Amino acid sequence: MSYRDVFGEVLADHHESPRYYGALPLASKVEHGFNPLCGDKIDIYIQVEDGVLVRCQFEGEGCSICMASASILAERIQGMDRLAVLTLIDAFREKMAGATVVKGLPSEDSQEDDLVALYGVKRFPVRIKCALLAWTTLKKAISEGDTP
Amino acid sequence: MNVDLIRKDFPILESSVVYLDSAATSQRPKVVVDAVSNYYLTMNANVHRGVYQWSSAATDAFEGTRALVAEFLGAASTEEVIFTKGTTESINLVAQTFGEMHVQAGDVIAVTRMEHHANFIPWQQLALRKNARFEIIELTDDLRLDPKEIERVLSLKPKIVALTLMSNVTGVRNDIAAISKAFHAVGSHVVLDAAQGLIHEEIKISDLGEIDFLALSAHKLLGPTGVGVLWGRKRLLESMPPYQFGGQMIQEVGDYESSWNGLPHKFEAGTPDIAGVIGFGAALSYLKKVGRNAIAKYEAQITEVVLQEIAKISGVTLIGPKSLEDRGPVFSFSVASIHAHDLATYFDLNQIAVRAGHHCAQPLMKKVGATSTCRASFSFYNTLEEARLFLAVLSQANAFFARKGKEPHRRRSHVVS
Image (tube, rainbow over all chains, first blue to last red; front, side):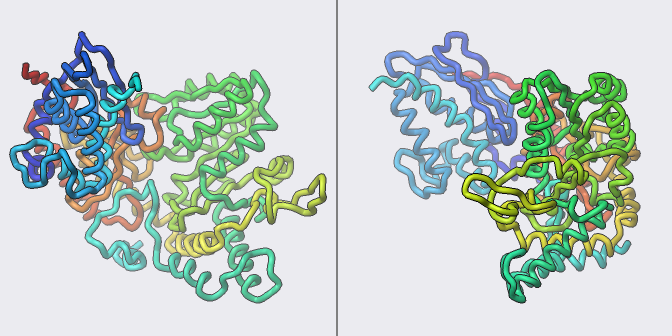
């Protein structure tokens, strides 16, 4: 049995060749995420201009699910509106918590969308927290400093 | 010891799962589950209170376990055996009563780097509360206690030394008799975390030199979860204030003051886990029947095979001692090309239950230089075939992930602009 049999081609690819990996010198903020249960660590670098997430990169140490999830997230959100990213993060968390259909997310059979590969992590309930670390860390990074 | 016959006593082992996480919690033989349900089905009543038959039967069964624990440990008296929720509560009890009254500002409290968080944090926090000095006895490269470090900390004459009988990460067994005698000679009190170790060999308090307190958990000794024991020397227990207040622990309650029950009840406030304690009694009787000398002999065979074979798999690093001496059947390891959690999932998909993480021993993991490792821990109900299957799957996983020839944390940045 190979890694690809277990986690699938998409996660394997993102794990082996993570997108937007590495520190971002121009970052307007760095947010650190840590999972004390398993020791996964992530640093998320963001550059926000006029409410737009111009650039987002990450660095970290963790299991394949944690790192692949960060890569899939990073690939998806470059240049997105900050509020739209927050909506996406909440939708993804809802999906991983067990919701079958979530507005704004691709459906389970959208084969073209890398995000769908992460839905498969629900088969391993104790690993869901690995898939969520990058997302919750990014949420923290872009939520704080909100002015009403 | 006939492992095939023994496995028949554990209904859960009929499953196809290979259970290699006994250092986290042991499995229970059916006699333990039966004893728990027998209490609920035939004598369910509170203990030490009612004058009716059920309460009397429940009290007899409950106190019967106390006698079995005293025999199991070789305690001088049942008054020295206090039931708690587990090892963690036992150690916190000592830290918050004995530690609180015995440690002053500037005193030294010592632990070792191989402690489980349960025998580390209570002392670290006591030191902070008391403005005492917290000292850590460091380890050698193969993760055993460093004799030079023991000498160093001995010279500091600590008030309290807290250490483990056996590491839950590396399986290292400490020479408690020698260490506790040396510390007693400089006036220290010795607290032993015996959560690991007691199931692997016949050990009595008299084999442990001059320890003052010992903590254990029933669920690592074939018993139910939620039950543990604190053993302590009677004169020390008598000198200590109560840990919690409430029912059972009192002698007389006045409007403005109260007096305390005698040992061991002074430390057992509230209704205990009666069913759990009764189940623990059945576990100790079962363990006695199997015999821990036989268990030690049998497990040594498993340990030998695993140590021998794991050394042959290149890319797999065993954390801790590679030799058979003074260690139990607990093996932590890492594989160069794969994260511990991915490896554990790989084992799980092959129906093998292993642990991955920091094993509640972050100070030790700091020394190892890893945030998480995998751990396979064996017990006397595991077979040699299971050990060989574990080794085969480990070898497979390693071969597959090594083929990719990638370090786990060295990543190409694949930035698309």
